Amino acid sequence: MDKAILIADDNIEIIKIIKPYIEKEGFKTIIAFDGQETLLKFNQYKPQLVLLDIMMPIIDGLEVCRRIRQNSNTPIILLTAKSEDADKILGLNSGADDYIVKPFSPGEVVARINAVLRRIAPHEINKSQVLKYDSLEIDINNYSVKLKKQTINLTKKEIEVLWVLAASPNKIISRDELLDKIWGVDYFGDPRTVDTHIKRLRAKLELDGQYLWDIKTVWGIGYKFEVENV
Image (spheres, helix red, strand yellow):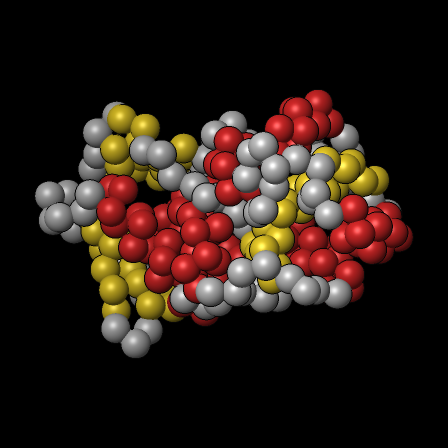
């Protein structure tokens, strides 16, 4: 559904507060009160973005996020009552694009929604080609990564981080530049999320020096996709 936001929260009072603000921005709203209903309505209406509470009945928000990410790159903003770094990282690891810690203002919710939708605009990342290095293939059009012809299970943001680095081989890219290009200049979250995504990429790609390319840390600056003979 064009310009529709799926609001998934079992707290009717929160929905009553934020729903008018979202609709005032020109979005249609779809409401779900538990994780199972969220998945059903997501598949039925194909919303532009999902606003997803973590503490949901039947199926919790993190699991809902993981299931959506199996087949869709629709942006997801998590609503959480937990502010600890570990909980935020867990949410991002599940495939969320952003998170908002309760209590929050309706204005903040609207600002986050608009910021995330701006970040996923087609011009944000050049999608004109498939990058290939040694046994690695990154297809940003289909958001897929293959290593030794085997598909690697990466989140949307992990693929985008890998793409931005690999698109400029042997060039040092700062954390701030990665944040700007992938999360947007108006990103509200923790800048350490870049380090978290790099750590997960290295683990999932099992980087141990066996390839002609590697993701290197440039201490105090950022990262680079190091390639031999380029």
